[in-house]
Every structure is written in C-alpha cells, then in structure tokens.
Length: 266
Length: 374
Image 1 (cartoon, each protein chain N blue to C red):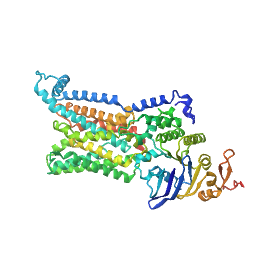
Image 2 (spheres, helix red, strand yellow):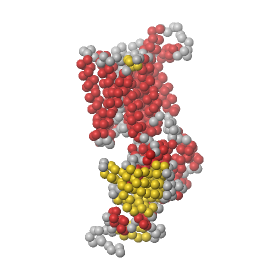
Image 3 (cartoon, chains in turn brown, blue):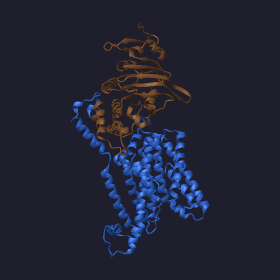
Image 4 (cartoon, helix red, strand yellow):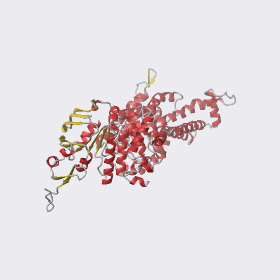
C-alpha cells in the first residue's frame, strides 16, 4: 500500500505542493489529472525520489521511501519520465538492461535473475524483437514501450508513468495502456500515471486524483472525480459527460465556446 | 527495420524460440559487452610496440636483442655474453623506463579524457581543453621555482600539488560554465579554454620572473617522458593505478549517466557523488601524468574518439580500450619524437599536437550539431 502523507514541496519560496494525502491500495491504477502546472509531475518526481519533499513522507508498506538510499529506493519504485533523453547509438537491449542497475554488484555483471527480469520485461512489452536496434531509430510508440520495459526490468512494485501517452497516436495510446493494464494484473503493486486525456484516464484508471495549484481537489473512483463541477472548478472550462456505452465510465466532451458553435448538450 | 515494428502490438508468434532461449541469447549478448579478447590483444600490441620502441633511437638495437636483454633482466633466459654491455644499459636503464612511462602517461591521459567526456556528456572534454592539465602545470611550476623542496619525508610533492591545481582548475571551469548555461555542452569547453589560457599565462609569467634560464621548466612543460629512469614509472603508478581501477569499475555507471539526470537517479545512482568521485579520480590521474611529463595535449581527445569511432559508445569498451589506445599512441609519438631529428629530440607534446590539432578540426566537423550549439 502506498501512503503519501502531508506532502509539501516548496521551490524558491513558492509552495508547489501543499498537504497532499493519498492512500493507494495494491492493485490500483491511480490516474493523476489536472491542468499544466498543477503539480502532477512534481508529485511523481517526489514519489520517485528524484526530488526530496520539504515536508511529509511517501511510504510503501510502511517503509519511508524518502529516507532510503538511492539504490534501495530504486528497487521499490520505477518511473517512465515524460521527456527522457537517450544517448545515441545505444541498443534497446542495453537500455532495458540498465533497469537492473540497483541490483548489480561492483563488477556490474548480470546474474541469472537479472537476465530473467530483462527478458520478462521485454516479453511483457513486446520489445524483444527490437533488442538489436539503436533507440534513435524507434518510433514514438516503440520508444515509449522500450522505456516501459526499462522501468519494468527494475522489478519494483510501484510504477510511475509521467504522461505515458503524450505524443502517441490513438493506436499506440491504447496499445500502451492495454500493456500497462495487463502488467498491473500480474504485478501486485501500484501504478500511478499522470495523464491529460480525462476520458482515457477514466477508462484505464481504477482511481483518480484531480489536482489544482499543488493540491488534490478530488480523489476517488473516476465516476466520482470526473463531475461537471469538479472539471469546471479545476480547468475553468465547461464540459458535458456521457456514460461509455460498454464500460459505463465517464466520457468527457468539451463544449466549444466559439460564437456560432455553442451547442446545448443539456 | 522489420515490418513487425510497425505493428504497435507486436507479434510474439513471429519470434523464434522460447523464453529460456531468450535468456541464453540475452546473456550472450550482454556478456559480449565486456571486450575481454580485445583488451588481451591490446596488451599484446602494447608489449610489441614497447619492444620495437626500445630498439629505436640514436643507437639502433635489433628487436630480438631487445627481447633477449629484457628476458635476461627478468631472469627468464640465460644471459648471453656476446652483447655489448652498453646496449644493455641503453635498453634497460634508459629506453625501457622511458617507454613504460610513455605508456602509463598515455593511458592516464586517455582514460581521464574518456571519463571527463562521459561525465560531462561532452565529446570535447579533454583534460587539456577543460583546464585540468594547465591547472596542474601551474601548480607544478610554482613548486619548481619556489624554494619549497620537491620531496618531503621521501614523498614526491609534485603529484599531490599538481592534483590540487587540477581540482581547482576543473572546479573553476565547471562553476563558470554552470553560471553561463548549465545545459550547453560547449560552455564547459569554452570556460575550460579560458582557465587554460589564464593558467598558461601565469605559468609563463612565473617562469620569466623566476630565472633567466627557463630551459628546465620549458623542457618539462613542452612535454616529454625522457628524463629519469625507473623512478618515473614508480612515481606514476601509485596514483594512476588506483584511479584507473576505480574509474573502470564505474564503466557501467557511466553508461547509465548518459541518460538524463532524473533517469539515472531513478535507477538508484547517486549522481552527484558519483560524478564528483570520478572527476577527482580523473583529475588525479591527469595531475600525476602532468607532474611527470608536462603538457602532452590531445591524447585524451584522440584515443577515446578513435575507440568510439571503431566500436561505439559503450563505456565498458571505451574505458579499457582508450587506456590501451592511449598507451600505444604516446609510445609511438615518443618514438617519433626521438627518431625524426635523431640524434636531436623533439618534445613529445609537439608530436601529439601536430596530429591532434587536425583531428580536433575533424571532430568539430563531425559534430555539426555541437557546433550549432555555440
């Protein structure tokens, strides 16, 4: 179980995150939504250990991740960043193998367990076929899957995804999130992703947190979080909500404010 | 690219073999990343080039005689009586220590260069370009012209003092470039060039002011491995060997550091501590080399780049092979330095600069994207 307790983060005297409390049981996929600058990425970076919080703690099964040495923490939590820069010429296999960094000894030689974890991560993300390809030759969707494989190879039970579907087309988007969903079922951990597309978030996340100005405004089941009032309060825009014909989960449709296009969905 | 890559979902049935085969295959691929055979061949090449180089000079000695003299000294063969004893002295007491010193200095400079390039993610981060070497040079000059003795309690003071100068220089260059634009790869090189010029001008001033006869310092400064006997390698190794081992053990970490900072931290690497410890080691190795041989430019740039061009960007290969190529490069340059104008000798720094400068221009042309960032 992941517990974020009274988390605060100040940057240059400005409070970027204030009083964040989240409890996420194992088996959940938490979607963090909110406008740009609401603190989604900052929250993920603190949970991943890249930033130290000014106050509060991030606990995984009672262990405070913010107090762990980097190497130990990396065994609990892995992250796929939004804008990962990758060195030219590196092969997919070598990149995925870097996921084993927190487990390797001083000589850096992969053991049998490491190799199995690497192969499993590549199988689960369908990236084994690309093992010999340089990363700069991959398409956006393939690259994202390779980065996911790298995070999976870390073998951690807390997986963070920062805008995993940004800049992906609709086929890659669903393929990637289907992969995440499939992985989550066999992982016994928690997946947290920040995501802009509210409809997509509702279909894939089992719970959602809506953020604004560094605070969590609403937290719970997607149907409870995605209401017309919440969205107006956080995004200052009007939307209309439908129920998805199959899943029954909310589908968010924006209402255009342009003259002559104003439609009355009510 | 195979068409399968265009299918976002991939197709497992098109991949041959089961998961056990995959593990074996991945194991073979990953373990090939350690170039054991290549390093072994490189060491053999170094020994051969050393033997050839020990025979060349004002007095030419055949390579088989060189081999016999070395074997004899190592008590691996019977001494042969019919060799002139002066040859033995030349090979064993003069040329061999010199050739070995050249090898160690070349290795140290090349390994430091590869390390700086990896840490700063900058292909131009050579110990001479980022100010490390000239900082060490200035510190050594201060000691040489000052009344401070070079030896204290039997310890040679030059390497530790050079180390302090080197650290100071790299710290100044780093702070200057961070103030300008921490993300630009070239601001570090430009700041380093500024530090280099500053340190060189101070060195020149000190030399001129200290004594009218500046030939000893100038000789040292222009770079050479000719002086001293076996005490030179003995003076280098206690610094270069531990630093080299420490850096080599971080070759995989250096690969991970090529990712962005956040990513490396998420993979459990203490980025700042690792970078600082590697900078300290690379500076110490450079400083030891400078304190023995003066300024020998471009080895730290040329050797790692040859390795990169030949075998790619994996530091598990770059670090050991740069060490090998750096040794070969400087042994060879030193051989040229003492044979081109024989019996006169050129400073070896002149030779490496002669080859290095055009190489540097080639490198700039290759890195067109880098040039655009200036």
